[in-house]
Amino acid sequence: MNLIDRDPLLLTPGPLTTTLRTRQAMLHDHGSWDSAFNRITGEICRQLVEIVHGAQTHVCVPLQGSGTFAVEAALGTLVPRDGKVLVPNHGAYCARILRILGVIGRASVELPFAEDQAMDPAAIGAMLAADPSITHVALVHCETGTGILNPLEDIARVVAAHGRALIVDAMSSFGALPIDARRLPFDALVAASGKCLEGVPGMGFVIARRSALELSAGRCHSLAMDLHDQWTYLQRTTQWRFTPPTHVVAALAEALAQFDAEGGQAARGLRYAANRRALVQGMAGLGLRPLLDESVQSPIIVTFLAPAHPAWDFRAFYDGVRARGFILYPGKLTQVETFRVGCIGAITPTDIDQVVHAVGDTLRQLGLPHSA
Image 1 (cartoon, one colour):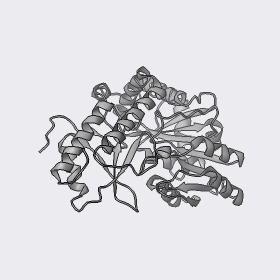
Image 2: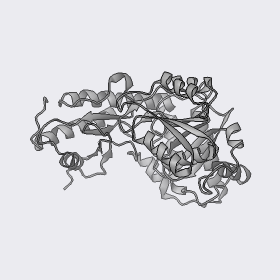
Image 3: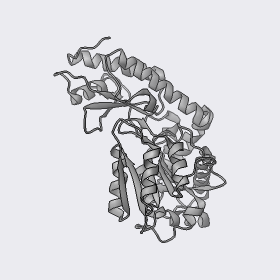
Image 4: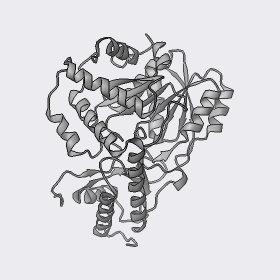
């Protein structure tokens, strides 16, 4: 039985807790060919490009589905069928890119890194120098399997210096961390509605370099995921090719209005960073330590080492915290048992304090010792 009479707060990497205003935006129906809805789509695309200061060089292509749909669309559209993609890999979402490339028939090469270590730009550069057949690098900016943050700007410079194209999975960083297309060369940046923009899930999008997108006609392995076809149709008609997620789009428009009112990327990043500080400090008081070193920890999600105690059981821990009004995430590592707590969504440090209190109560209920 839940102890809290409200929806639980989502301390996850997405979907996220959203505001009442964002949810209320979905109470209205929209016609997919209606000019008013098409204006919403156009304005959203303009705003998304502006967040990365890319209006002079990049365009936004929205796509139905989760963020993974958009990642596959970017890889399948922008990478030629005879291309080859270098994928630095230290986690589940990097591994997913490798799996996508295999399914869609694009050659790939993996550059492994330890699960708790950021990617090394020098190692990426050495790989590019050693293999001239590599045409693209596909990079996960924030690997939410652990919460690790990779040095995007340094990697982008290395990739550009070797004359290769960069595709960035910015699913968990877009809108919270600074990304500036004026000084950071990338052919595509992929994100989604249900992450740091604090919309609801259901729409991915790709911010693509216009010149690269213009060259990609006929490349895609899929009709539904062909970004070039989607973009040219939008340009010609202002409409989506196929039925759009109208309620998701309306919610994202409202979420973006709140994003601007909060102060944009800088303000959102500061709030998430404050959430992370409150979380790490509070959990330390319970004897729970983060997996990652502070130097590579993102403000998006924190992976905690599970207590080394015979009474520890993640399912019972999860259920106890959920009954107190909060949903956490299991760990996603292969070498050590962990659990994850997100810092993003429509939550504040005050909410984080309540999370820590719920965790402490649950640990006591399970008979797990802690220092609080």
